[in-house]
Length: 134
Image 1 (cartoon, rainbow, N blue to C red):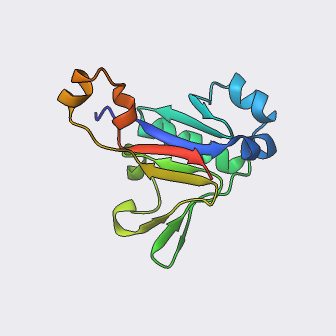
Image 2: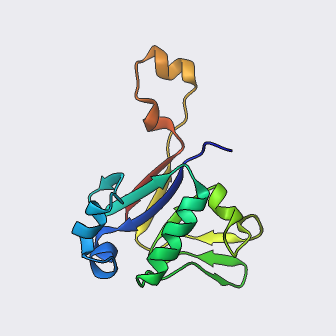
């Protein structure tokens, strides 16, 4: 088994509107691993579990990703996943990805591990991506 984080990003506004009992329900169900103001993230290391979570969110009324021409469009949530892709109806390797309008992804600056250690930097600041609300 691959030990890779599967992450789902959405906004607090979408959660309030569509998740059972809104933001309180989301927190009570331990769905918030990280918050950045209006953005929230749920993570797991099990693609099968992420698949179950995504299917539940769609049942709650979250708008699922859709394939338009050669692009997968994300709407109410965005998936940064590896194993989940094995369970998706879309082959992520064949298509472009259209981020939701509310998500801003910036590439973080890169440093080698020796530079991070030498300057006693937080390695999470150099993990590749920085997610924030647009």
